[in-house]
Length: 67
Image 1 (tube, rainbow, N blue to C red):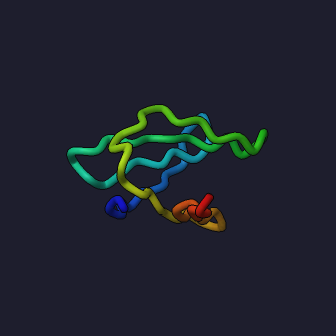
Image 2: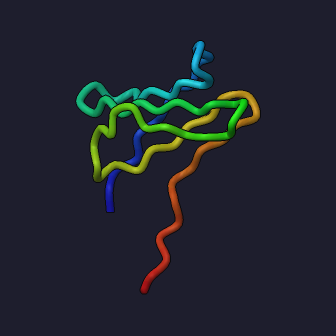
């Protein structure tokens, strides 16, 4: 299981920009509020679980369902 990284959200011209607070990660993603789409700009640490919150938008780690 990976470690948890905190995402910090800010308003940007393209929507809500989330940036990982960990220096060695670099994950960035943007949520287009008009379309409701999420685009990952930089993937960052593939083993980390990213979570963050801004305003009424909450992001939490995905649930892993055993197969």
